[in-house]
Image 1 (cartoon, rainbow, N blue to C red):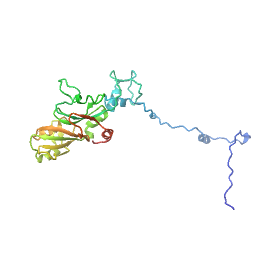
Image 2: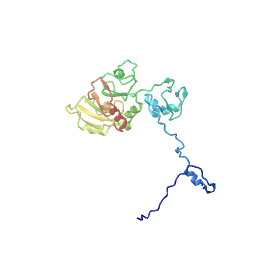
Image 3: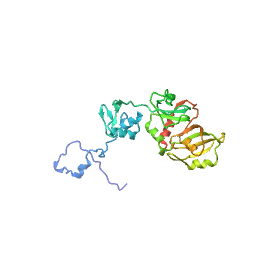
Image 4: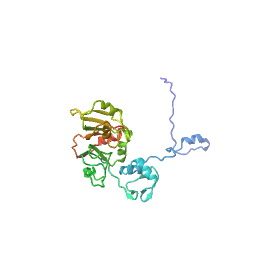
Length: 291
């Protein structure tokens, strides 16, 4: 049966040398290129990334240690106040290993585990690391939370109660206090007199304060409360802004309690107590643009 297929003889590789030099083909430059060993092309400029999990960038190390944010760490590095193994490093992107000794302004820095502590602040404590007048500070309430030194994110005045976050994560702290990220805060406000319904629009439109115009994002009466109790949602980080907004339209704040901060609530957290954030809560704070 004719299948119209040509017989193809397989080419056998010769195990020996070519017997007739006259029949040896001349290899052209074009042919040579086919047999050049394959080499990975490396883009000139930036080096290939390192996949050594033990090495991290120096600016990230400083941020992880709670010194400052990564951007601020870049400034410190460039000014020459950071040393690695006794040598000043000014190179951005410089990587360090676990055995390196890092010093900032002459002090050795130890990398710390990130901590996130949520406190339900009681009255009578000021939001500061220490007080020269000897007044009670919020740090005394979280001193047993962890060995690492944590810092309050934002402030609550002495008479204000409610949620206050502490962390040694400089990047997250800067994010939560920056107006661009609009960290959401909800306050339970008790006033010295009934709140007029006409004043809802006044606070929503905004009032002029000494440091600029401020407004409420949302405001309503507290369900089950009296006409002197309202709930206010804001994202401003100005000092004592809630008290000052109400004072600007003729009210005095009798009690002020922060019940929500950046999506975190006081659920199951008694006054004066603290708890560590869960992993999913930390991830939410880091990933969400508006909290």
